Amino acid sequence: MEKFSELKKLEKKELLEKVSVLRKESLNLRFQKSSGQLEKTARVRQVKKQIARLKTAIAVKGKNNA
Image (cartoon, rainbow, N blue to C red):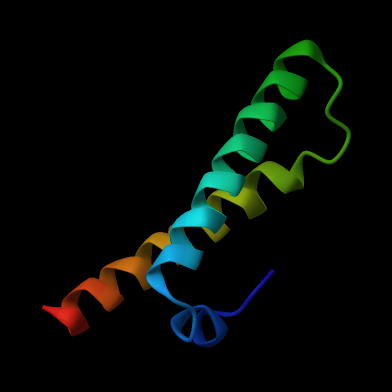
């Protein structure tokens, strides 16, 4: 899990790519949870928090560039 200070250094395109990857992982985790195959349930929460961090970093970049 990356810290926010590390995320601020990345380009907006890289941040959007990471969000896309994490959303796919989130979808897979939800499917695993509903079918009873998910072993590490804490990963769902970690992915959600990481997506939120990335979205915040994207918003900060948008404000700085505007």
